[in-house]
Amino acid sequence: MAKTVLGIIFGGKSTEYEVSCRSAYSVLENASKEKYDIVKIGVSRDGKWHVYRGPDEKIKDRSWINDTENLTKCFLSTDYGDHAVYETDKDGRVTRVPLDVVFPVMHGAYCEDGRLQGALDMSGIPYVGPGCASSAVCMDKAFTKLLLSNYGVPTAECVYVSRAELESDEDAVRSDVEEDLEYPVFVKPANSGSSVGITKVKEAKDLIPALKEAAKFDSKILVERAIVGREVEVAVIGNERPEALGCGEVIPGAEFYDYNDKYNDGKSVCVVPAKVRRSTWLNLKTLAEQIYSHLDCRGLSRVDFFVCDDEKTIVFNEINTLPGFTSISLYPQIAMSSGMKYSEVIDRLVALAFERREKESDE
Ligand SMILES: Nc1ncnc2c1ncn2[C@@H]1O[C@H](COP(=O)(O)OP(=O)(O)O)[C@@H](O)[C@H]1O
Ligand SMILES: [Mg+2]
View 1: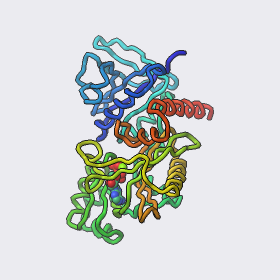
View 2 (view 1 turned 45 degrees about the vertical axis):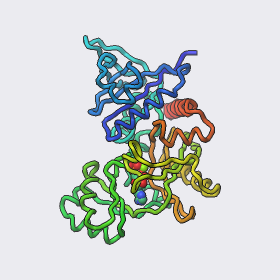
View 3 (view 1 turned 180 degrees about the horizontal axis):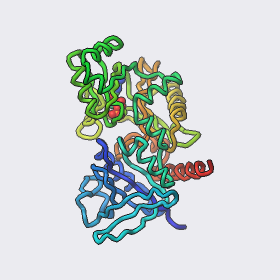
View 4 (view 1 turned 90 degrees about the horizontal axis):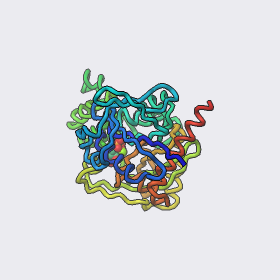
């Protein structure tokens, strides 16, 4: 049987470039070589596309971009049904590289926020993960919360601040926040990830600096009540009938689960499966599957919660439509704890991508 040509897109013009490279390395290590011919498509930090034919290790350590021997510039064909990237060699010769399906192993802006998904929809190539609108809404923490509050999903009380408001009247912003919330609060950009731009603010004097920090990453900022609870994340897979596979708990090693704690020398601990009561797991499962459906997710997502008050209360925190796939990331760990091999997770995601594209082309 002919192999499926699987495009793995990695890198990207986002603050999560490094995480993406590490995630992609894990996917490359684990994807079945019998089933797939893999085309590695690297997007540089400044958003330039390349086909990369060098060793996977250079993706992991991010030196692939300097491995010019193995690198050719390429662009995605947005001609519907063409299903290819076109690479240009040093002499200007253009070659078509066909693709059957694509797994964007990328996170953050331009990658996970609907922009790439829109381009892939134009091309008609089946791809892993939710579509354009769903990705955009899920990436934006303000849109996600506003939408889910319509369905009665519990989330942390929040004040929305715009960069423009902050620039025009800091005192007014401070009093708006203090009218509705007590310290400590979490300040975060609406569109970000990997804790970039997020600050826990314990006293009034630190609020404005934290807002300015968040404003570096987005023009919309959330100020949330600090939730006291355990961080439990649920891995969901599927299209119209999503299935929550299991949950994992993150025990932050720092004041909160910040970037360093997530990916560098942090002391955070992940417990998979999370040690919660069976009734709590069933509530998490139902809520995660409902949230997935409300937000029109497809393929996969990781739905993150706080479990509070001795497991009596569950509060939604955020959803990640292309969650981390590094060797220590929770999504693959949870999926494996449910009995799947890492390679089977990839196979299932690829199958879901084909299934969705088939349905959509019928519409
Ligand atoms: N309202 C909150 N209450 C308590 N902790 C929070 C809150 N919001 C964020 N955090 C902490 O900050 C971390 C990162 O915030 P999160 O909203 O998950 O953004 P990101 O998309 O960057 O992961 C969380 O894992 C948690 O440790
Ligand atoms: Mg998070």
